[in-house]
Image (cartoon, rainbow, N blue to C red; front, top):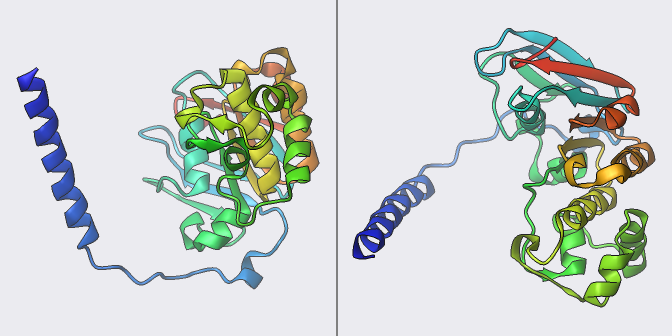
Length: 251
């Protein structure tokens, strides 16, 4: 036990040193920032030009404004990495990503929040009210009626009843929710955010037979440019286009 405590202590010291070093790094001036007028209010065109995931072959693909695309492939084929590139959470080792004419990193925080919705089982869920869980990350909180409507739209009425409404308590990381309830909550949150670019990463696994209808309800209502990483062929068939990913490449 003493050895374990010492190991945790040394890990904390190392992490503290790295954090302090990062905080002392001078801030770089942002270049090529997109203005609100330039980024527009419509669903963007998504272009991946000469992209390579890890050491795979390079490829070029394009998603048209408002197009709904399914990313299909085996586990570890590169679906999540591709979504993270488009969201600006990763930088491509080769090639470039463009939302209309801008790299994702050229968007300000406010523009990113309005433009991109990235919904994943790993999306953060902090302890607090159900209202907070459903509206986390939104620029402005909708009226309670709109929040309840979104929750009911994605099958969360039983959860509302069980927790006692929007003031009910959600545990850290949704520990008091089932995996299906958690995913439905994330779909409702994505609906309330109303992004112009919607990225869904493997949400259908715990939704059961309702997955195609729920995901179609979200993607069909928003009208956003949409990319859905899925293992469910019924979900994929509801999309406009399917990109098959094999060994880090859209083939």
